[in-house]
Image 1 (cartoon, rainbow, N blue to C red):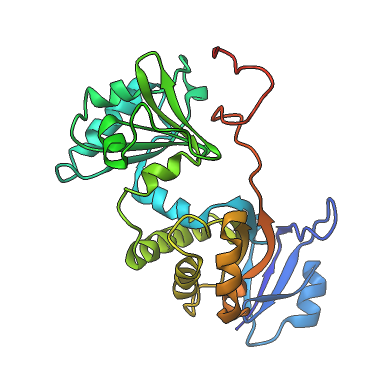
Image 2: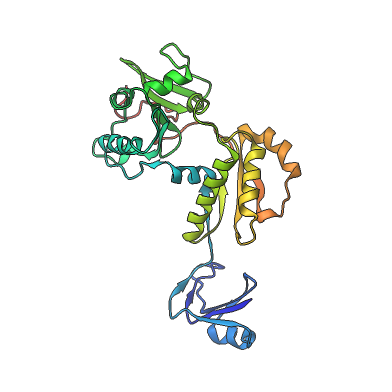
Length: 306
């Protein structure tokens, strides 16, 4: 199939401020970019489809340089708290979501950000307990470096007031004991008792992420998913199954988390380097936490903290 897009404002992104008028595409691959007259003179034939851009703007496909594609897919299936305006709003959204779930099933929300609230105070375990005394609740901050859970979730994870902080993590405490806040690696204590990720659930989540991303013009991502969903090979199998479908043209560049490097090294040898244009050439190394989640190690306390 051959197509000429013409009479537009085309940004080829080959140099700063470069603008062209037309593009010639063959079998889904851009062959040439130039003025309308140039492209028409060189490539117009009877079998070439002509599409008039009518002065509209055309960009190349976008590539997200920092994504967690599989995690994004799971977030689309869970309660979105990113637009909550206060912790009271978070609680209200959780209550409504709980009404849709079977009794005692985990209630999971993602994306809360207290910095967007008029009163930027984090949610306390007791506030979750007041509404969900028996159902485990886990809400993850927008940065994914922090979460808040209720007492039931802590109980299932075996966390109590004398539980020591894990290496690279902090279990939040205050005058009342555990406050429900978990930073960095301490979150893994809860992840260990949440429902397991299955092949089907990962496939569904990645499919959702692909459909949403491509609908917004993305043609590829740099993503970091290999350390969070069981083992690396299972994650790679999911990407292979979802993105090798004939109609799905999407490039994925995996950043390899430092804790997944050995698992990745043992798995990647059997991976076809051509499928869906995937590449591996970068590592993601964590040496500290996040500023937004107050998990980064600073020489002075965060504002409002002693």
